Length: 626
Image (cartoon, rainbow, N blue to C red; front, side, top):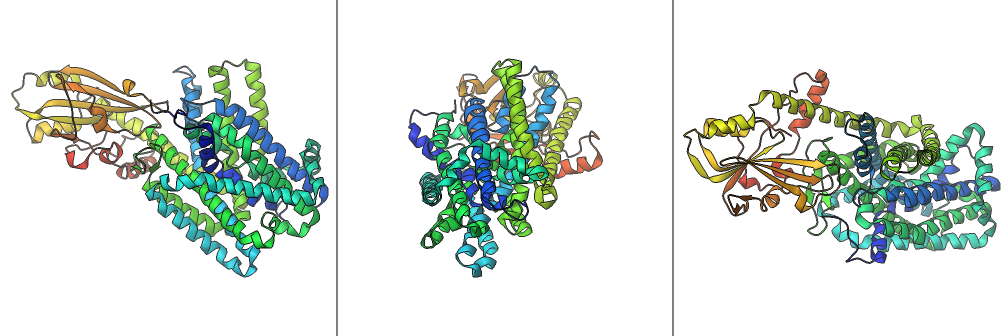
């Protein structure tokens, strides 16, 4: 089974990798969080009680949301070692009875969570790189006009190198991010030593007094504070790559202490130098270290962006395999790591969206208004799905699961409400993007379902058709024909066309069906199921997990027909594939029919998606059964 194993990697090595990949996003939050809290948009006065209260709020939010919710609770909800919204969705749905109506609601929540994740994938590279490069204008105000062009140039370079894969860069992720966190801690300790009274902020009373004193403006203040926990979902989404122990060790042993020291250090700086409020992060550094800090911050934010871009590739593959998106071209960039993939269409779509966002918002502080809704919406969806898992999977008493969910959902709801206060200042962007993506995903799901139903009703039934061929006088060709089908009960169009135009049958005719289960991985032993239908005809069912990429020729190597195994790479054979019919028979409004048609025409072929050698394919069909 293709699961993550710690046999060959020590816990320390895994923790190093987790620091480099998992914590890049949340680790760069100190660049802008404190600055946004005391910006003009929040209206928080800069005085000692507010400084201590803001830092105290950050401390306890990190403690509750990240440490308690994610590190100690949510990471326990793994689906055969995998995490993330889609893995949690499949875990929750599989816990319910097949006819349970709640499954539909959970599926919609999962789609919404995936859509919000894409919004995060657009906003994270933009805000991270912009906030890092903005350090140049602190070092030299004359460089302010160059911040946006330099940021866009870095982003173009970042997306350009995606086609080469992350395996080469990945070796440097851990050391660079460790250097980043150690720099955060060191500069924080230095500032704390000059204003040790800031350590009072650890007491929760300062957070309570700060939030209580905000009155009606408390939601605006919380909307800024929540920037400190952006990236918390990455702890869960990347669990399959490093395992729960490594992620927990990295957070508790390095990341959390370093972040707290830096936030305390920024608070200490503001206590003695309130004029540093324009950029408390960079102004924490002595002037000789400012340029090195900008360089290190830029590297850290590029790494943070890399992690979320790779996550978008993985999320898209899972959505395709669960039937919510059409097939797209997938390129594996590593011979040893199956999770390292590159999807050109997703990559360039993200780049265009990120550049548009940079040009529209201009600065990291403006982007912060748009950032919160995507993050907090995903957090709330995770909490709702966790309730099902706690009740059905873990068998928690209903009162305990309800109590935990109520507390977690209350905090998530407050955070989401606070982020929504800035809807008109930019929060509309992830909402609008999510609506568009949900429209695409639900259209594809429903259109695909309607199309398959139409095919099942109109095409001839397979078994009677095969029986009628048993006594026909058609010549048999000493080759193997492989028909990719989604419905094993009807005759594939390619077979009908082969009989009509070539007037021959092949010695071996395989009807291959590929399905993706609601688990991350399927073992090789569980994958292949062969059923002999008649002389020369077989049904082959191939089952994969939603985290796996199907390799049809490789799977067929294990199939034995008449005592002989197939070798798709040396024996002569062909695969026929079919082209999709865009009309789904009026099952949807006309405009959705048209959208489904466009998506269908742009879906990748079976050759690209199923790893089929292109020179072995003969097209004979008139539609693809997806």
